[in-house]
Image 1 (tube, rainbow, N blue to C red):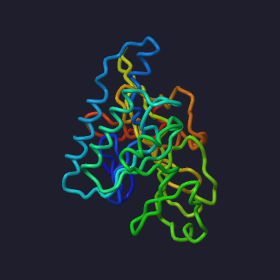
Image 2: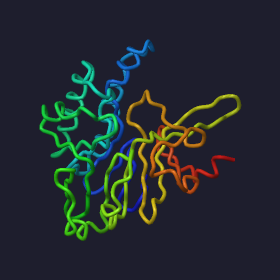
Image 3: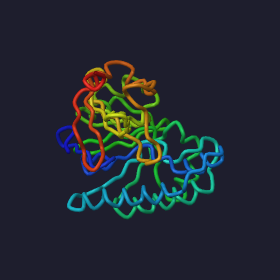
Image 4: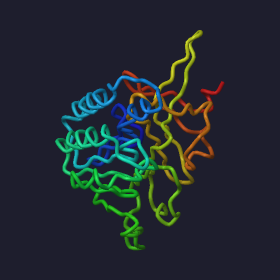
Length: 261
């Protein structure tokens, strides 16, 4: 389903400009829960691999030049667990089979991602700007120049979304893609309440803003109708956002405000 012109939702991913974007994979989450005494079967990684392979099949007739993981590839903050080491490398190997370039965007959980990225020679960036003609990989050690900003009009920035970047960076960006929020909606039918992952589409100032759900199936997500909102990008005008629920297919559910009634 198209969410913007030339940008489509493919299950929990976004595809545009030969780029596939997923967010908030949180590899190692099951192990973290087990350490807290919450016993969950370690089946989530295999499920994510199957889901990723299904996405590739849906895009088999389309070219994928790059895959962007928009923050929180792994779950643990200050360490790399055994499960994270093993499964992040397997996951990166899977992605590498289907593209020429993998970009890891730093999320708030990615305080120690460098050793993993180095093992597979993968770039770790604060954000990436993608456009129809060319792209710029930019991080804190390579600050954006005024020349780059002038050339970036009508381009898309992929950034995790846990903090707002300098306004100069967004000056001529047309679309912002974030993760971090893990958006979901809880829908009630009779006595049953079920939570569904969803995409959100709205505006941040004069920019298109797309919010991606978590790629980890065990993370239900933030109920945007009831829970406290995390991302500063979503502190205003959330009721005006469009909701796209992901289940067996993508369902357009209208405005957030209409789901509150």
